[in-house]
Image (cartoon, rainbow, N blue to C red; front, side, top):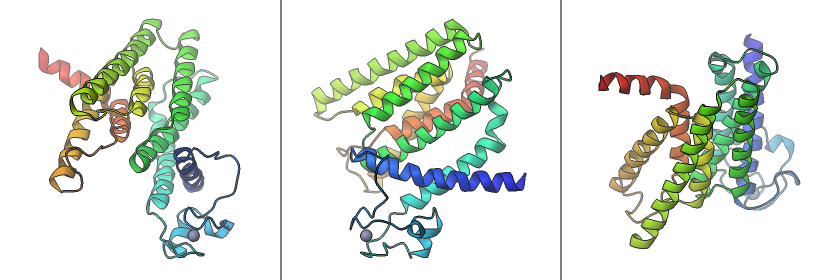
Length: 271
Ligand SMILES: [Zn+2]
């Protein structure tokens, strides 16, 4: 058991290292399949011992071996986050998986692992580069739609629930587009980026009703709190653009984990 946890943690660190490459290269519209890792500053190719997840950052004294440019703290943070996510997925996440029949007992955990990795890329990428690559959004949309359709076809999800999930995704995309046009017209800024608009249908299909409602409400709550804090602390001006993708991801994770419970609590307040 301990061995397995350590193994998964190391696997997660390695995946985190790969995600760093994906985040950097998709933001810069480069292929992440070809080419060796290089220092983003001096472009010197990195040897394997400069590229050990988590360790190299500290062994190198947070600096590139060749040009001494400082290495962003984001790299080890993404690696650690992915490592912790793998362990969480194994220890706690498995409690959420309910489909026991073959092949779903295998496909379902793998699906959510991939979704988690995708979420990390979108979260960090949007935070750093204020963009969610179109290809990444479409890959996510394709994956969640395929997964839900497969569940419906195999009678593991009701068609009505799927339809409501799709409709809530479409509604959100329209709402975000409308808000975007409105703020653009009256304030000259995009309230939401196109990356956000392409992301919300996936979140709608992924969460379904009523979790999607909890998720979006909390995205706005998290976003407002952090946005106000950044302005009050003088880190951002009122007119500065703050990426909303990270808050959509936070809200989605929150909705997935606690959405049902919060919805039931909310309903109990009404009666
Ligand atoms: Zn360098």
